[in-house]
Structure formats: C-alpha cells, structure tokens
Length: 131
Length: 386
Ligand SMILES: [Zn+2]
Image 1 (cartoon, helix red, strand yellow):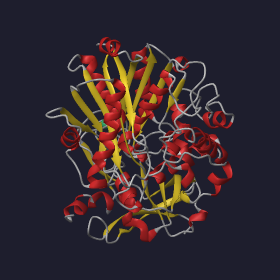
Image 2 (cartoon, protein in one colour):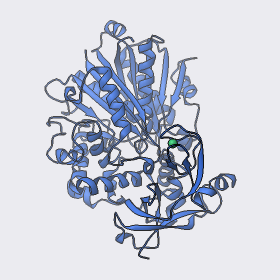
Image 3 (tube, chains in turn purple, blue):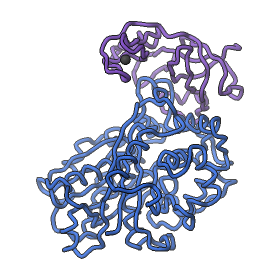
Image 4 (cartoon, protein in one colour):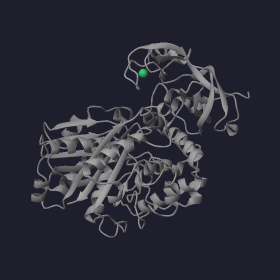
C-alpha cells in the first residue's frame, strides 16, 4: 500500500478538517463533493470541535488481523458539540468504566502499527474527559 | 411487467466444508436448483458473492461459474452488496424475467470463507464497512452491531435475555434443518456464558463463518405452469441503501434501508405486513433480528424483544421468523445467504420443509429481508403461492 493513501486522509485524521455546506450549513466529515442534505456543491473549511459525548460503545475482543495486538480495546460513536458524529477508539481508561453519555475529548494518537497499509498510521481517539 | 415465479431451489449443506472448493459449492447448489426446476436451459445467471477476492483470491466469478456449470457462453455475472449480495442477485434475476429480456434465469449465491484464518475472515467481512472511517479505527462487524445493541438497550431497555431468546429460537429451528451448519439446540445459559466477541455480543449472538452455495431459478408464470411445479410467485421486490458508516446515520436503533425496501416491496405487492404469514430475516447478530422486526413494521420500536421472549416468532407463534434456523444456526456464507432465504421460504410455501419444521396451516405469503454491512443496503422480497 502506498503512503499516498494515508497522506490523502491526513487533513481529516490529523487536523479534523471538515466541510460546511455554504447553502444549508450541513457539516460533512470527511469532505464530500456534494451535500447529502441539499445537493449543493460548495463547502467552506471548518475544524471539528474536540469535545463531545459518547452515544454508544463496545469492547472488541475478537479483532481483525491489523488490531489483534491491541485487543481488547473499546470503540464508540461520539456526538461532538456541533452535532457531527464520529467513530473512534476510546483510550486511556479502564474499558469497564466506559459509560454511554460520558464526556470525551479527541486526542491525536497512533492507530495502527505494521498495518495492512504498510506504514504507521495516526489519527484521532476518544479520551474520557475525567482523565 | 410479466408475472414471475420461482420454480427450482437448491443449496449445499452449510458449514466448514473443507473437501469442497468455491466453485464446487456453487455448481452443486446450481445443479440442485436446475434438477428441482426441471429446466433444460438457462438464459442468464446472476451470482451473489461478497468478497471471493479476499476469501479465495478469485474474481471474475461469472465466467468461472458458467464454465464449471457447463453453460458455454452463458450471460453470467457476479453482483455484490456485501452480505445482501444474494438478495441482490435474486432481484436482478426477477427484473430480467419480469422485463421480458430473458425467460429462465438463475439467481445464485456462494461464499467460501474457511480457506483463510478467522482474523483474515474478520478483516474480509469488515470490508463491508467504511474502510477509512470505521475499519481504520478497529471497528469489526460484531463491533458495529454491538454499537447498535448498546444504543437499542439504552433507548428501549432491550435486555440480554431478549438477545438470548433470538439465538435459542433460531437454533431450535435450525436443529430441524439438515442443511444447517449448527443443527443443535442451545440454552439461554449457554448463550450467556459463551465467549465475548464485542460487548455485549457473545459468540452465540453471532452468525458463524460458513462455506456454502444456494441457487434458485426464476421464470415466467406461463413457463412455470408447463414445468408442472408449484407456482410460487414473486409479488414484491424492494431495494434500498443508506449511509455506509453507522455514525453517519441519524438513528442507529433502526435500519432505514430496510424500512424503505420493505415499503417498496409492500407497495408492489399491494400488501401490508399484516398480510404476511412468516419471514426469513437477516439475523447476522441477535440484535439485528430484533431491530429488523421493528424496521419491517411488525412491531413498534422497542417492542420486538419482548415478542421474541413471548414466543411470538417461534414455529408455533403468530409470526414465525427464521424457520430455517436463520443465519445464526443455518450459517452465513455471506454471498449465498439471501438466496438461501429464498430456498427456505419456497420449501415452506410448497409444504416441503424437512424434519418437523414445516409450518402448519398452509402458509401462503412469505417475506425475506437480506441486508449488507451494518444496514447500508437491504433487499426485501415477498413471495406468494399462486
Ligand atoms: Zn447543504
């Protein structure tokens, strides 16, 4: 796998860059070419807020090949302060203490080592706010 | 549109079939369907297959299977919609016969999943999710359904006991299906002490990794009459997609693609859920069966789990679901699943279901629901005895 695949998404994964539809205000993450709400094709760049609330989660014990060394690990969906929802790992905490509704912040972390993509890859994870 | 009937069905035994290859599985099922229908030719063939490239390194499935089925130069193609590939193959065949383009069309499905290890299979199945924004972060298929389960439990108070009841019921039915991968009963205690895969889902909440093939033959009602087979008409077909990533959807406690596909199928058939006698639905995980029951409109949101507990969807219940054992007990060779659902409903509608799982009172109308990924696509079909 060429590094271009990782590089291409770095603006989303490293800097949380999203697009805001200039017509209806819908925020899309990652970028899209057309707004799924109104069909408009122009977006302005916005940066996602780095705090939100956990909507649901699961502790993964049977992992795909590129994550077997990390299992068990938690993944969840959080709703950020502007309503955008993201899926990411929940880290830096005892997985037994994770609760729906808890406040999280987004931190920049290593996601995979020695992955199918062939290079170290980085991105965002959720960390409970109480840490 | 011409009236279309299913005249032949066939499938392989589902399971870890080490002695049979990808091509063997398909051809065995296809020959069984051809023999059952009594047809002497095919005009075209649609094959549902999710990811033979990742499972066995083989693409160009249309050419391979037409070749090994001895159908020289047949118009054959593979269609893909993740775990709904089989349902999609059925719809393509239905459209082709209904349109008048072809008269005798096979809809088949196949997957050979045990030629790679289980972490490889987990990786291959995860390809049905958003590779860059779900899989990249470590989400697995059980993991995505677990996210739906937790959300459903939070919103409606759905319980561990309700999930277990789905598994217990489907294994009870599958124990009577000679084609099932796991034809045995499980108890609530066994389900609840089985290995955790992605909390709260345990291994006995999950459909297995399976090798298998299934095939059916569709033709016009006029030709079906000449063949002398019971006429099982296809009266409704619906197909819809949704945002691929779970987190992009407004509500993860329902499956919108199923709601939309069902609405289309009911409209075409001129029926409502109340006119349906029984269904095969996509219970890839126990929570999926509960959510699908609600998304089909069979129960109000949050009420399906209770209905399963009460036995309403059992063989003797008011609306039997997954008489075949479902994906849970029968097995889930992903590309074949949507077609294997058709095999079961046709057997039930003909009164030919084996080993005591035949529904009483001559069921007349059946529904199938087959979905891809975490609900990013759904096919719904309605079949009726003519
Ligand atoms: Zn817009």
